[in-house]
Image 1 (cartoon, rainbow, N blue to C red):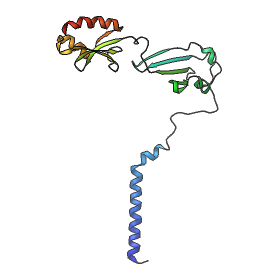
Image 2 (image 1 turned 30 degrees about the horizontal axis):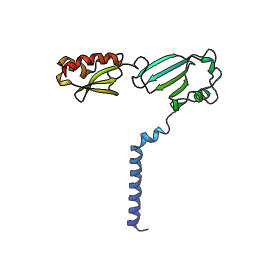
Image 3 (image 1 turned 180 degrees about the vertical axis):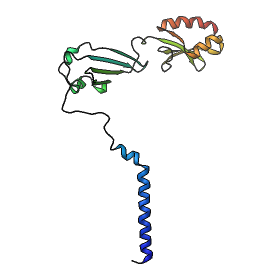
Image 4 (image 1 turned 60 degrees about the horizontal axis):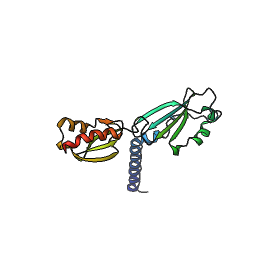
Length: 189
């Protein structure tokens, strides 16, 4: 091999080595993540089962109002002797459930419900929609479900009432209460 070819091979090898070193330093954090310790230890030897003394906690998370109701499970005797896997067959993920044992040995059955909690189920509040008074489902602060637009123009209302409607703080335990208030607002239209 002549001197020029040998020189080009050496430059090429040094250049490739430099490029690989630069590449490795840039992706060090990503590669290191493959070798990080596990977040949670899983033991396949020990299977926890529900006993008569196991506290069973029922959590219901309501997505609409973002409330969580925690209580005891009403029929604990049905779960005695069952493992997490067996309980997960009854309380399935597709039905919104997650089941796990806590470190203190309690069983948690968590359910996500795509609705309002029982306390907020009937609540409505008045607000504004496109410059008109509107009725929204749920307590104040939740303008996701519009029930109806009344046709009462916000610009014709007194300033303080318009501010309350903009803030959405006029809430009522049911639609009948809201309708009573709306009847009084008709005089401004």
